Amino acid sequence: MTKKQPLLHVEAATKSYGNKKVCRDVTFSLDKSEIGCLLGPSGCGKTTLLRMIAGFEQLEKGTIKLDGVTVSSPSVNVAPEKRCIGMVFQDYALFPHLTIRENVGFGLSKAVQEKRKARIENLLELVGLADEGRKYPHEISGGQQQRVALARALAPEPNLLLLDEPFSNLDALLRDRLTVEVRDILKEAGTTALLVTHNQHEAFSVADKIGVLFEGRMQQWDSAYDIYHKPTNLEVATFVGEGCLISGRIAAPEKVKCSLGILEGNLSLPCESGCEVDLLLRPEDILHVEDSPVQAKVLHKSFRGPNILYQLGLNSGEQCQALVSSHHNHDIGEAIGITPEVDNLIVFPKQAPR
Image (cartoon, rainbow, N blue to C red; front, side, top):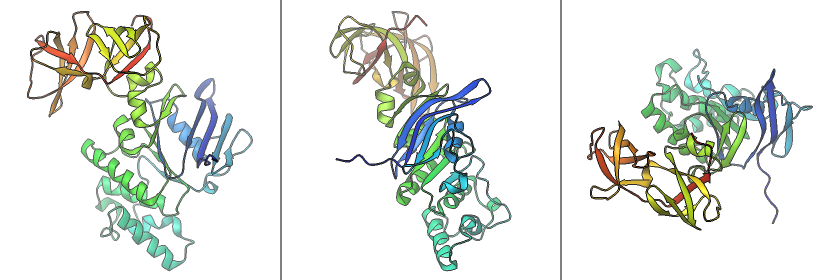
């Protein structure tokens, strides 16, 4: 069976500014109609990588291919306007003197008038702004402006859409709602897209594939599920989600002995019996059970409305976290009963003491 060709393939992409390498041998692929996300802290190289894909930055080493055609290498740099790529920027970059309808149609100036008009109306309908076409950008909300920017980028039917921190200027509630809306719009349009963000909740809400970047290196390119439950290294495990590390020893093929007893589940890495490991426990792995013989001391609490995230001290001197219904409101310093319920044992070879 012939393997299908990815729409975007980045191979060993490397870029330096002076003596600082901001991208180091980054490799990943994105299939047609997939939504990908580059996730990582500020300064990890994700925006530079996006700019190289767009054609705004020259590769130092490696190649970037779009639909099998090399558009970037040390000797090739196809102009951005010839790559059939759309861009959605952090600040939307709408034209204030143009109406919403004119903004959406800005990149369609060469289209036949009737086709151009139909395309604009279809896109306004797609992004839920069919009744707002006569308004100007300052007359609509930030979330609506973001959808206009998305419609304008989709108008020329690009092969690939790039989104650079598109939700960072929105408040939390609007951001959460819009990430889901944008995913639905992209999926309905069948658009291949690559998003840059430092917000893991955005990445989980939007992306089919997520690439976690640290210090310019691709640590893992995978589904959201595997990034969370099967992280390839300690950096990914501690960056994505919440949790604490405790010491453990492999007691059997799917058992780890630790300060909470013997835990049984799917091991994230193959380890021999007797191997010393660091075990990552997520807050959802620890249940609050009033009459449990295992007691932990509340060190810190973070109220989250329906839940409280407790930072707990164990008798071993180690710590773990528990996400508990906010009906169970315990004081700092209070001892509470806990019991582990772990399906996935996320383990790593024992590291130096931290």
